[in-house]
Amino acid sequence: MPGLYFEEFTEGQEFEHAIRRTVTETDNLLFTTMTHNPAALHLDAEYCKDTEFGQILVNSLFTLSLVVGISVNETTLGTTVANLGFGAVRFPKPVFIGDTLTVRSVVKALKASKSRPGQGIVTFEHSASNQHGDVVIVAERAALMLGRPTP
Image (cartoon, rainbow, N blue to C red; front, side, top):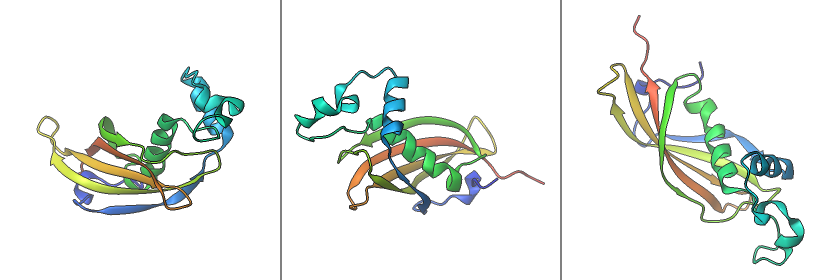
């Protein structure tokens, strides 16, 4: 498994994720319609021409999902028991169709589980920047992680 076990994380550990991803119109359209979000800001190019942005905005929850997904391979693939929740999530700049996102994760906290011996909670701060270097999302996520198997 490429994911890390609870004991392999350290506070302050940083991951610059290898996968970069260009957001497509199809990504945004499918996510927005599958989640029954009717907002014209995500779907209607003509409507968006007259907004302050002048173009379609990518659905922010798609951005959140994409950023967490990109982080999985190098951090939690196969070693996550469960996502326990998200803390603060901020979107300081909008994401537009065609933006390429680069994702970074930092381990903010570690806590051994009291109710699940051999497992622990890792709190990550995930962030992504667009091709211009603008931070477009910062999100805190807590994950219950498997501990290293005992021989």
